[in-house]
Image (cartoon, rainbow, N blue to C red; front, side, top):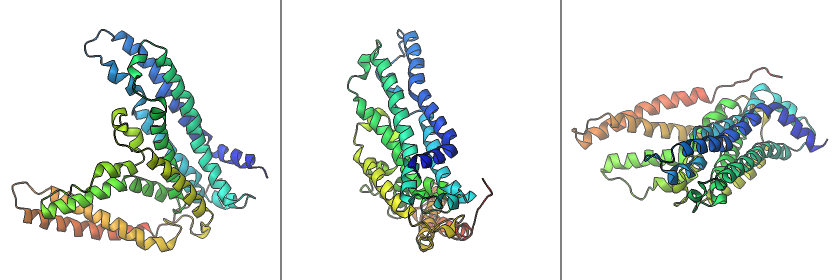
Length: 334
């Protein structure tokens, strides 16, 4: 059977999300640019108009870009998590294709759509501005740098969500773990820094949160153009995409189908995840409860409240994870 048939199969179940992503790119770049040009021309003599900031900002962060990230996560969840919830996963594995090929097709549909849609719309927006009287305000901004930074953010986030889907057994756990591990690099550092500063009174300067934010993939979409050019290494998401794609395909070939509908597909990972979830929630509890202590009270009082919050959240998260790993969600679907 031709691989084209596999592409058609995946397109049939994902065309709505892929179309929405494409339309969002149209609004993100060309439509936003045309509206921006009209606005700039009306405000050209306004003393509060700062084109040196507003013109490049057309290619910066926006709510539309955030919506594209959300739809990419939903696309990856539909390809893997929803398949397992509805048991379409069993039908897919019965087809005469290698699992690795199936995974690559799912990845190519998502990343390919983003690449084509973004390249076309971004180029149109850039060409329109360069052909206008505001072209000079883009001097100093490299086309490929402005394009690659958000593209790597989209591709890394989608690849990461697909990778998470290879170890989870259903869509809820895929969404939950995607969110948790997306913010984990800076979240855990913030919790650890709070733990140290609460007990020592000194913030650990060596825990550089600005370095670890480079491992939070949406940061490449949220960062402004100035901060993107200031210390963000584009090779980090590039390497991450290759790593997630390779590991995801390797794990997808070894997915145990008998655990579809459960939180994790690989049972030997449960202990590690339990420890991680309980530890992070306990640190979060300590930070929240100690933060309620007035500054006028002593450091010792704050430490006592920290450990009260720590053990309270430890108990709650222990029972929460116990129920979490016992759940089994399957729904009927075509």
